[in-house]
Amino acid sequence: MSGLELFAAALGVIAVWLTVKQNPWCWPIGLVMVLLYSWIFFEVKLYSDMLLQVIYAALQLYGWWQWTRAGETQQGRQVSQLKGRAVVFGLAIGTLGSLSLGAAMAHWTDAAQPWLDAALTGFSLVAQLWMAQKRVQCWPLWMTLDVIFVGLFIYKGMYLTAGLYALFLLIAVQGWREWRADPALRT
Image: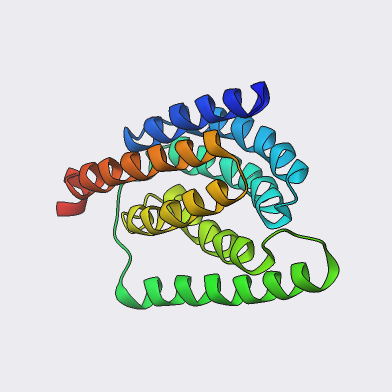
């Protein structure tokens, strides 16, 4: 555990908690966290996770824009649900991305866990996009991914980050409960 990992983990807890509370400050705090984690994952040869953090940086900016854009017709995003086909489509995109990235990482890098890391990356991108769009389905997907991430990080000896993702799991459960109760879903 490094001081950098500790600081990034603390920022991660703050960012995810603010997401549950639908506070747009989750996005700039999350941006700093993902930039720090991109370096951390590079050091432990989790290259798909490193790449994921770089993409998350762009998605942090997208989420910030989605949650804060205002005007006469737009007051930012409201919590909503995806229809069945949209969920299946998102998961299919996650699968295709996972397989493509896994093949690339297994063939061209010395990645520690190329296929698992790629699968977590592919589906995390789907979950992050759904979160930026305030889709309630992001939370069950995050819960599933967080359980697997915990195991991966324990395997890699990244115990603080494993603990962080265990905490993310608990926060995701709370996010799912709160977002499902949001009045916007009833309209």
